[in-house]
Length: 491
Image (tube, rainbow, N blue to C red):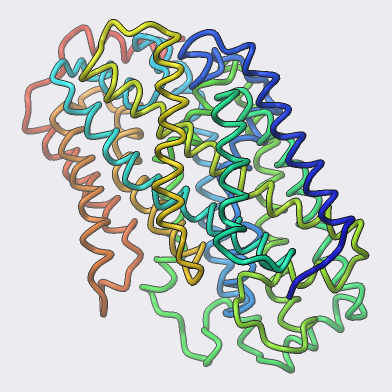
């Protein structure tokens, strides 16, 4: 299905030039590594909230989740509940304390540096291990965004997948390379706004064209009654505890996502977190509900079955709206893709610069040198992710779920315990991170029975258990570390 329309092409060109313009704007305002990777801790409440959620949801919000709902119906609501709860808990308990702790603990500008400073790890093991997991899982995560971009351009303009993939990759690399964190955050802000309105308008348009809410529900029931039952699959069988826990377990991923946590670290003051949390929750709840509705309504509205369910949003836009509106709606997918891919590229480049280049090769590197190392790292990481994305059969949701599990299990327990448990030790952080990450990688390779459980659940649980056991068996942290912990609570 190609949408050959000059007005849609024009909309895309204007949108992409606007994103690149933001990159050029902040290029001149990037003076040191802190500016490039954390924006000098200068984000306001609105940019923090919308950039965090836009970078969180990615292309899977308008492709992966609607595609899952198209195939399974309301069963996908368990993912939405898990994500909604995880978002709230992350903003409520992690955001403010992480903002304070990262500043007090040596003004840490990356998650890896925070771990090193928090536990006074002079060996560099924590920092290096963090960087390795960031590189591993963000390659898959960034690849998912590039796959989504390739599907978008190839579907809308009827061009060959690899060419479409190349176009999307070049634009994302462009403004991330130029402007760093502030460019990424401000583009994410605008992209979050576009995504929000598009995801509301499309299901409303579908319901209107089907004759209203009652008529839409009746038509869904005619297709398959199980589509509106959250406890059964489309064959009518009970989901079972493994399926429900697996879907709900997405909740645990939030505490370990570096591209989301970096927004908490970058807000101008901890006092602004509360306002950001309210903005973020409104955005998230509405967006998740509407994404599921798009998939379910698309099942009814589109008479012919889709070969690729993840294209349901694109096909509905093409059927529902004239080309000048469709261009804006389809730009929302591009916004969703870019808002996450750019954040992931930046975090990965930051880890390579801070935790590999400066930590292992050149500790006295100048700020100008480090900024350019980060920029070149953006290109390098993007090239590898691009190679991984060359398979057009790749599933956006599958790639995202693997990376989400990896970060959630490797970093999530370490982040939570480091923020709230004074007794936690350096060795427990190392072993917990290692156990969580390895569990995800190994569990993913197994299948059948209990191994069908989403890998984030066992990974998070085992890592947490290891952290508690190793901490209690080891020597208490130094007085200096404990006093710093108390200071964070008193701020």
